[in-house]
Amino acid sequence: MNAYHTTRIVFFSPTHTSARIARAVAEGIGMPRRIETDLTLDEATTPIEIKDELTIIAVPVYAGRVAPVALQRIQRLKAVNAPVILITVYGNRDYEDALLELKDTAVSLGFTPLSAGAFIGEHSYSTSDMPVAAGRPDSSDLQRAIQFGKDSLQKLTGRDSLEPFFIKGNFPYKTVQPNPSPIYPECNERCFACGECIEVCPTHALSLSDDGSRVVTDNSRCIRCCACVKVCPNEAREYHTPFTAILFEKFSARREPEVFF
Image 1 (cartoon, rainbow, N blue to C red):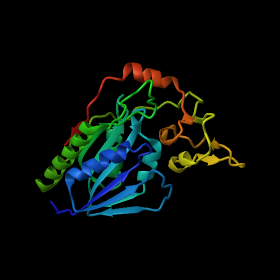
Image 2 (cartoon, rainbow, N blue to C red):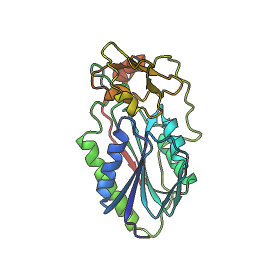
Image 3 (spheres, helix red, strand yellow):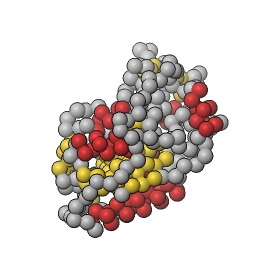
Image 4 (cartoon, rainbow, N blue to C red):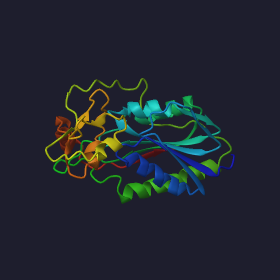
């Protein structure tokens, strides 16, 4: 197997959970050179060539599939001689077909799968009164990710070639039904139009009103990632969805990462 000296981290991570896991895996790999490609706010379409680099791709799971915007943005990647560690991060319910979908997509872009892992991050809909995987990834998750990086590197250096391996999931992938709820994150009376939510929106769905007094949302672009809710310094962005209560009731029991080699 070729010797690699660069780790490339690629992620789409509106609430930073996928980025934290990816960086922990890279820490476990420990290569001296590391490049980050953050696609969270990047709407460009120009190709990104990745050549002779051990790559980590980390994306969030939405309804058991790769988040559609993440899937769209990683299509820019063009790989040459690039083994890849595939990571999905989900909110403690289930990742279903997302990891398999990410693998198939990566192969179509020229990557050779090395390993894969499904990790847990705080659910986007989690609230203080109905927490769902609150605070995750925690120290245990990050330590597991570091070890996953070490184990992945050991596999890479110990074999002459990489053979296909099992990744949990089904094909055809599950069909994701359109969200029936017309509810979107919105501002309450505590908003003073500081604009921090505007800066973190991955689809640029937020803007200041013409008079600068409030934040307005283009619901046609909103993906309900709740990055705006998480970042607001004044708790002035809220998202009230009945799914939060369902998740809290049925999916509060702690789930642990799963890895595949």
